[in-house]
Length: 138
Image (cartoon, rainbow, N blue to C red; front, side):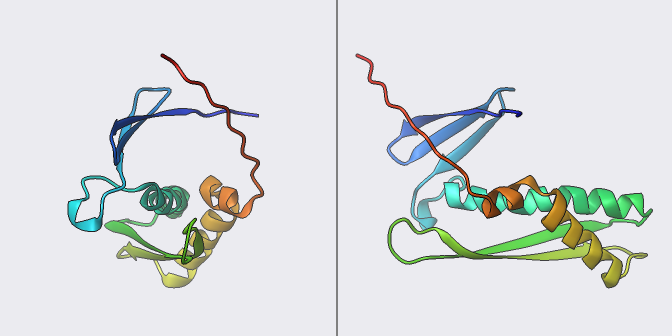
């Protein structure tokens, strides 16, 4: 089983920084929309899903020798009321700008990408176990 890890460190009360094993840094904040400087963790989940589903869809269209002028995924998540405010529904709208692709073949590619190859989508459908431990330092 392959493992991945990130380290999240507080920068300020509502600001965090996540760093992966390769040293790539992502800024995260929990500010209200008018004060936002970075994505929230829930925004990042939508971003992860949209980008994960995009990668394979783009590669498959290129394998079919289709020209990709632009590729966009609009991801909308509906959250439950209360705490925790988890996603109850997520909708992705895939937009391909291409002079030589048709909607039917693009729909098949997107379905394959989302339902078979996207690790984030599979993780959202899976039963995942969580564990935690705590440590204090002086």
